[in-house]
Length: 180
Image (cartoon, rainbow, N blue to C red; front, side, top):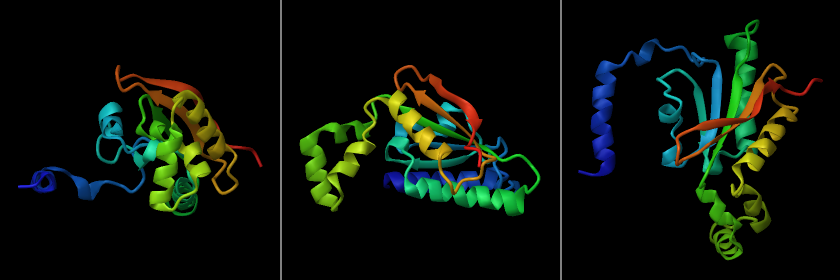
């Protein structure tokens, strides 16, 4: 039996014991978490989230990319036009972490070889490295706050998760987007 087979067996238990069909599409806590795909940073575990509590976007480093902005634009558009036109929007919590694997992109040789391997721009890869999560989370929060395609009703905050202690520290308190 493979590791995935074991997880699929767990799904059978989940499917018979959870009230998944009754959940609304909007997150119960009005939060969208952007974080790293590193298995040490599972937001369900470190924030003790239950199914339906929050929307989650995960990628390498938990970085704010064009794709992340497009996803947030989509869910904020749905919220404003269909799900909660008069209601409050949600908060986006950007969470970077210590000892991030994207830090390896700071190594020029590794970065050059990886860029050649995937056909990517080496300079662009250098900007994705999370070697100082406090600095990168501030940068990514500002990217979101200055985005012209995101609703001004969204609030954005930035945090750093310490993989050694399990503590999430707020670096940038929640505040509204730009004002038009």
